Amino acid sequence: MSGASLRASVAGLQALLILAAPAAGVAAPASTASTAWFFDDFNYPDVAAMQESGWLLRSAAGHPGIPGARWAPEGVGLIDDPMQPGQRLLQLRASTDGTGPGTTQVQVCHQRKYLEGTYAARVRFSDQPVSGADGDPVIQTFYAVSPLRFDFDPEFSELDWEYLPNGGWGSDKTRLYGITWQTVRLDPWLAYNQQHEEFAQLGAPGKDWHTLVMQVADGRTRWFVDGRQVSEHGGRNYPVVQMSINFNLWFSPGGPLPQGGEPRVYEQAVDWVLHARNVVLSPAQVEAQVAQWRRRGTSHVDQVSPPIRALENRCDF
Image (cartoon, rainbow, N blue to C red; front, side, top):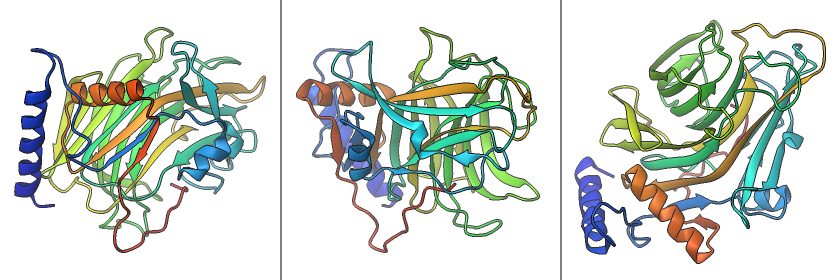
């Protein structure tokens, strides 16, 4: 879609929102006729049903994480939400004893068909393990990515939220990254990207749920945490090919992992995830749309068609 047509689409959506707003200052949900949606509330009876709707569970070895670690499909689970009766949560569970063979990491990926528009997810971070001693450089994520075909692939695209409660990537600072990638070489590492670092603890009990939004339009990506814009990127660091939507939980090779003792187990949870193709939505509009679907009992929407040229759906990066 051209910049002009995307702006026209946004303008039309804004007009609908103004007409439909229930009261001044209250966001209205976007019209479902205005765009193609992907929405998942993770209200599945089991993981097999989740896979049938298009999610892949990673088992392939490789980047990122600790060399020798295993990507464990059994680390993906669905649990009842104790705070929202009738709702379920996607749960990711990873563990480490500080060695590669003693480490499991976990990743889920949706189909590779997402590019411009709005991405959003409500994610629960954690600052401490659910068992074992704290201190491992664990990384908790929500991101969209295309495969890296070779070093400095010009078509590589990635939009990445990463929460590092115990540091990692060579720094011990607690932080949330928002990163827009141009391209990368993995070994030896050399990356071209724009990034924002939010230095805050976001995984304390009672303050661990956060809504993350990425707006991708007109050559710019805008990043929001809990309704607050924290960064804007652009230029060469703008996605150019369709990406898959992903969540993963892994351990940074750039930080010391204490070895020995009881394995440390970490968890991350996801309440819902959304993509609105070719439409820019504010965080308030995203929340209003999710609330509308829930009032209607709608737990899954998938209107985003794959590209005309079929792309391989992978879960290994």
